[in-house]
Image 1 (tube, rainbow, N blue to C red):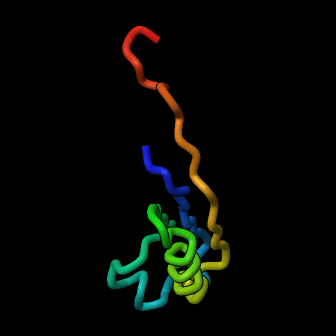
Image 2: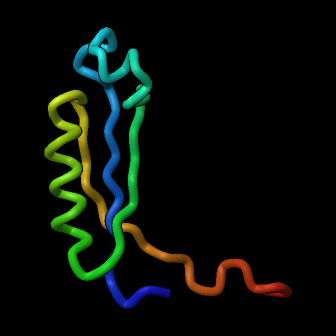
Length: 74
């Protein structure tokens, strides 16, 4: 379990599905990426800014962790 907050960037609803970025397979119809570490929020914001060129909906959210969710016998 990391001592840093994790962030996820979610991007949906492409502005133009005919854009070369989607045709070449660089982006899919929906993109997501998780960032962790000291500069996680700054990295997530930077990635989100880049995705906003291609997607209508881009969100940066914090990610929680389920503590002990998969313990055997719990």
